[in-house]
Image (cartoon, rainbow, N blue to C red; front, side, top):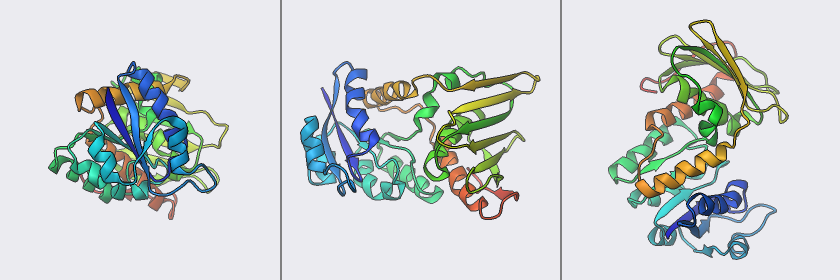
Amino acid sequence: MKKIGFIDYFLDEWHANQYPGWIEQASGGGMKVAYAYGKTDAPGGTDNRSWCRTRGIEWLDSIEAVVERSDGLIVLAPDHPEFHEELSELPLRSGKPTYIDKTFAPDRRTALKLFELADRCRTPMYSSSALRYAAEVIETDRKGIAAVSSFGPGRYDNYSIHQIEPIVSLLGSEPRRVMFTGTAVSPALLIGFADGRQAEIHHYGRDCPFSMAIHYETGRSRLFQIKSDYFRGFIRDLTAFFDTGTSRVPAAETVAVITIIEYGALAARSPYRWVELPAGS
């Protein structure tokens, strides 16, 4: 059995609560979250040691110990990407397959730094929003897409990735500029790609389901709401990664996603004006 280690900001959060059961199920019992470390206890939630005790996971008091004893590593802190560089340094030096949860990094500089460290230490590593694995996205014909419009819930800072990740997976890793077109209540972002194609995202509140409209150069269009179990697809890919050490998510796409998020937030300071993205996005 392969033993997976959790490294988190605090363990009592939704992803950490769900992943152990899903990983064991998806791997047919061949993998188990066996060890965990949290930098601090969840504010107003279950403390890390109690969280581990109730789930039959061994609490370890350092990142070093989790890295040493695990076969594969998951750096969580899904809503605290500002801690990913600190939490990921030892895992990325280990040579052991490491998944870093969304949102991968707080900015482009950090994203590039993490990939450079992983490459230097020959550590297999990737990151992704689970929405990349929605059946509706995977089944979309990518040939001849002219424009994409996406809709969804949540705040821009921690939920825009769930719209941007599928867009980049469909249109590629060469965004060139962004323009903020929304409001504080309903953030929206226009993304221009190198080949002239465009995409837009819209945050319409908690009751807005993830949906996409895709327009093709032929004039046809496709409109769909994401209803598939995208987490199932994600966990299946994650367990395959721990088996093979090979990621199917291109690093260039992950960097492009983080670049869009970072510069989209900057563009919000001056709406309706294009903000150019760094070369090599």
